[in-house]
Length: 190
Image 1 (tube, rainbow, N blue to C red):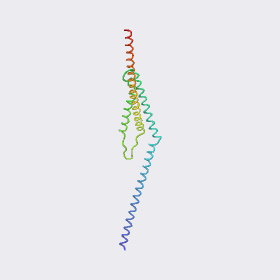
Image 2 (spheres, one colour):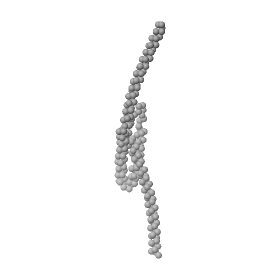
Image 3 (tube, rainbow, N blue to C red):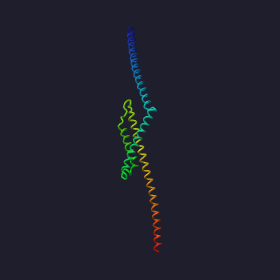
Image 4 (cartoon, rainbow, N blue to C red):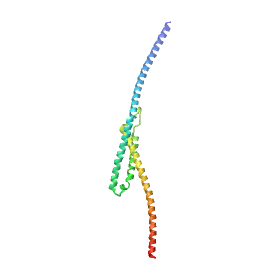
């Protein structure tokens, strides 16, 4: 019987150790869960702040204004150089120069910003609002430049077609006048 009591005590001690381990692990797990819950809440708050309407409007509007203002200033400078050039390269290509450089610069800055952006590691890294605005401005700047470039090419193509039509009309008018002149000269000669 004493042997059985000894086994029972050993069993009670083992069960107490198991209960102690469970309580210790449960406490550690509870602390881990609380820490993870806090991290998740901070992450949710950061995402909500980063994707809030106010933040999106600020980035979009800030980038759009920066792109439009810089484009207008650059175009003003190009037009001034065109007026100074009078009949030179700049004057003859003001329309294309108000689109092509913007397109190339905008795409270059946008791709450079994207390629130099850090990849998110671990819990993720947010890009700074300044980088967001620069990225948005570069994207819009490039698109505005592309739009101007396409419009300039479309106008030049339309002008070339109109010039061809006008040239054909002038050639016809010249032929008609030459015929009248030949008829008048034949009438005076005869």
